[in-house]
Amino acid sequence: ADWKLGDRFKVNLGVHSSNFFVESESYFSIQPRISSRYLLNKKSSIKASYANMTQFLHLLSNSTIGLPTDLWVPVTEKIKPQTSDQLALGYAVTPTKGYQISVEGYYKWMNNLIEYKDGASFQGSAEDWQDKVEVGKGWSYGAEFLLEKTKGDFTGWIGYTLSWTNREFENINFGDPFPYRFDRRHDIGVALTYEPSDRIDYGLVFVYGTGNAVTLPVAKYNGAFVPPTISGGGFEFQELEYITERNGYRTPSYHRLDLGVNFHKEVSWGKRTWSLGFYNIYSRQNPFFLFFDQEYNESEQTSENVLKQISLFPIIPSISYAVKF
Image (tube, rainbow, N blue to C red; front, side, top):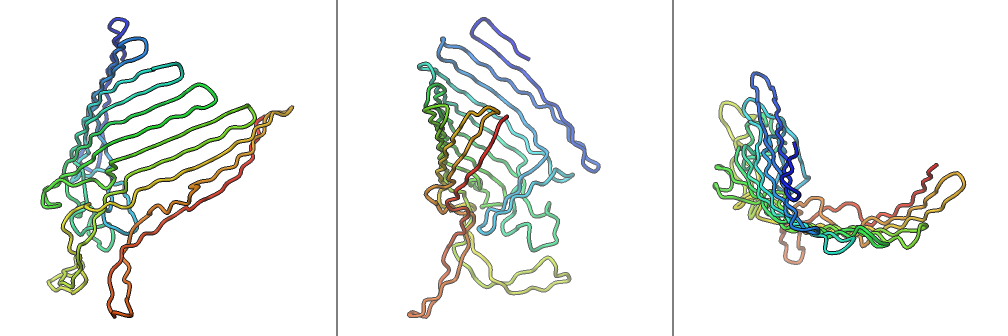
């Protein structure tokens, strides 16, 4: 519901209610939200908001190196829904016709989050996934900046986000907070369009993001291991990893530049368009996943583990033809 208090102040109040049934358990939630805006003058305003949210699906991500695995798992009798509370405060201004600038800061608290226990993953065991995870809390905060140009032959926007996302679990990382896998300190997005005439337009998209936080072992050793498939005692020897910190390493940053041009022509029966595009124009080798590879030095007759990466999608050209009647 919207309320206007005078000509400058506007408030929106809302509430979302949901109920989720799983086996013999029922999860009921009431999620209030409020947002407000105050006009400082004809060109600028401030806004503030609060939102309480409940989610009945959990994202379970493997933070170690190797092929990335993101699983969406539902709540159960044992795993409760995740909840969050978020506060945001922003400022927007239109300094001149066709330009808009906005900045917004936020802080978010999260509870009932799940994370794989140390050494656990979704592979290699018949153990129930619920027994492989820990339940804890998290928080994220940051600021978002946006510059937009909406009029003229040259239009587009430039956005930048500075953020932190952390997790804390009693039995993970010695109980100390650690960065979430998708904690991205810097995130930049640019989208520009130049349209000198009705017959042609050019487009540019650039993205940049800090690399993901992953867990790397500092050493490997042969040790005794009791697999869950062995009953009645017994153990086997295998190579084990020694890890000192959860998500203490960053993958290389992700960045990419895409370019495109569209040629338009009006005809008697409609409009036709030829489009030429280039994805990842400078063929950046962005990491898809990391792995250790053992390299042997023949001259020294020694071997060492070397961290390498697998990348996908180098420069990809494309061409398309479209008609509108």
